[in-house]
Length: 308
Image 1 (cartoon, one colour):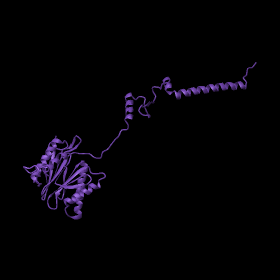
Image 2 (cartoon, rainbow, N blue to C red):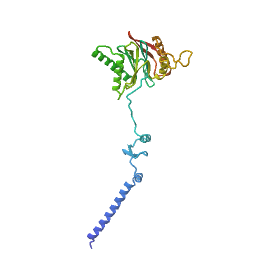
Image 3 (cartoon, rainbow, N blue to C red):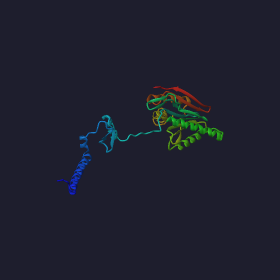
Image 4 (cartoon, rainbow, N blue to C red):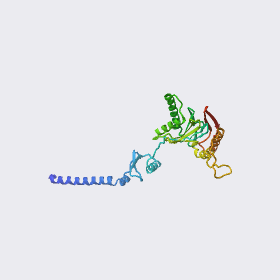
């Protein structure tokens, strides 16, 4: 008797195997997809795996690091992610220290400045002039950001030379003040980071001092200080040059008459002002240059200051 399965029995067996295969496949997908953490404990990743997943606790973003990365590196990466992005800033300006002052006399004008060039707590140079003779008995100083100051002085010198070629005559001090006003106002959207002072003689031969803000507003004054120690020197000049808070001897109510100082008195005053400023301000010192404008021309005097 030969035992042979009929077609119906073969179909039933095939159905049984198909159902068992589907159930096995379902459990495999369930464990490896829904129970990945449990499966990772049963079947750990091999030691030579190239990457391991690391999920930060501060953000929802996953950071993938090499398997040989140390714990300290992982903690640093998590701290950086929690701190936020790193910001980089660029400032086109700097303050290179120094102080300038101008005083107008009856028939002369004086412009003085120290020679120290600094950046923060560092001294870049002990001799960096801040006062310049630009011709036509006009002296200029632009103190603050040294690069902008030098650029402005060169532009002033160039414009004065062009004025000579065009008009064949010297430039007046008042006209030079208006010229500088136009130069500064023309750069108002990206201004020169300087305090500008010019000194010279007016049409009547009297001393004239003009001071400017960075965008060109200016006025004529008898004295003006600018720069790092301006807040220390300007009250001294107000009292000694403008005679503010000074009264006639023997009275407490009659203001002292305002008069012009002599050149010797002004030079002594300038030396005292800078000597006291060097005692209180670290960005002032090394040397003092004084440009003196008279009808004979411009002459320079130099005096040493403290170097510490």
